[in-house]
Image (cartoon, rainbow, N blue to C red; front, side, top):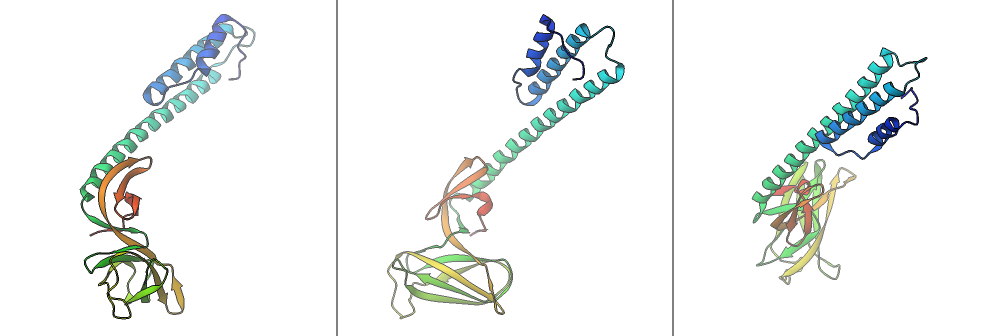
Length: 224
């Protein structure tokens, strides 16, 4: 502030009140107002009689504290809304427990002669090919999905390799090759997994997906 506070007991107390840590939310706004008023009273008591504060100075300082108080209350409101949204998101996510979801990943689980995965295309493709790879890195089968529109699509593999033999049940990986004309498209591989549980993370609901691990709710591309 523009007026210097003298080294009196009241001035020291006011300065201490102003610099004391404030709580958050409405309480923080009220504490800030109290510290401001104490400091203002101390300034008025200790001002130079030959050069007193004018009305414009006082009005300006009161306007500043009003602005700060309003921002504090707005922040408290936004924090409350964010907490409510996060709680609602977690409640919504619990409805996915027991359902299969497509999420970013390259894992493919072959069980009972069936494996399923997905692809996310940012744009339409003239040709989409899925290459399924075993544990040693060898391509055992290719699934030609043909031309596809932009969006999320799923595919299935019956466990039969390109040689005609039945693949051993277990975990495989896959990659995507998508082409539009002569241009390669950055398609995203999607793994299929069962939602076992939901946790509340720092940035929202987190799903525990079998075969994949922890997945943010926002990363779910499709619920099967």
